[in-house]
Length: 312
Image (cartoon, rainbow, N blue to C red; front, side, top):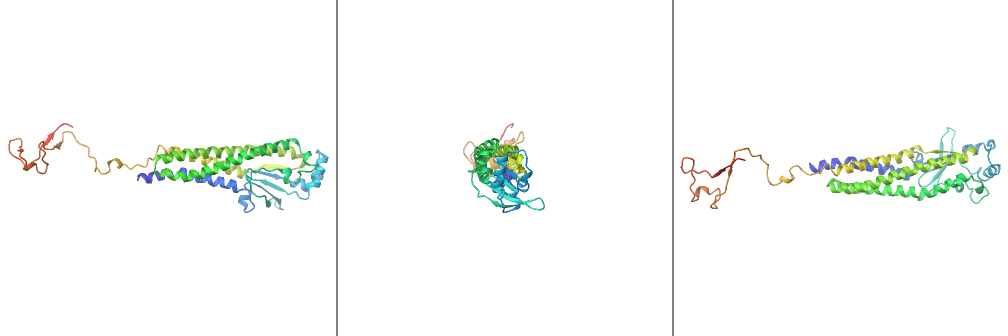
């Protein structure tokens, strides 16, 4: 029952670790046009449909920049751009107000979304007219995106290792200790990645809306992706706590482990008699055939073995 009880004790942290790993995998697979579920998993969405549909009504902007935007990107600009961990996708709105993704860029590590390059504004006169606030924000985004991707990659690897090492926890507390160590690393990097991605895309959203609001280009956060990454953090934290508890609870030892081969332990009552060995080296079975006479209280020979009488 000891090993069975220990196996039951680690079911909870193992399940939480698996759930955290699944969430992290979804973060990596998100922003894809292969399915609507994955397509809804993005960190940031830029809506440019208003600029494309009615550019002449935009007022209060740099006329030179507006003219350059109209001539350079109006014909190729999509309605929607979504940004994931490793790529971006674009698509057009439909009559019902929804949208369908039509293209997703190849996935690559440490990806960051550069609207100037994506919209074909680089190496043109428009590039120099882009607001400084947007250009500065993109420079910071480029640097932080590398750390963010590294944090997610390490978190994914640590969670996978945690599940494998967690099998050792079934057999001993040392296995739980080792798993707790790996789980701590997984928790730290998962939470760090979630904090970084949330802070980063909240900042980028604010920069987009501030620099491009006059052009009717609006940015919004992907709530589902943020929910998934924070669920991964919650699961990782829970797994770490339960792994830690398993190092001091559910030892896995059987209750009769130290009595194995000794038979049942019987508590001795006070004033009991115990068999003693013959002082002349004879066995108890041959005590009646020894040269030592055995007498009872009346001096008569008896066939009983000698006993010692002591107070226990």
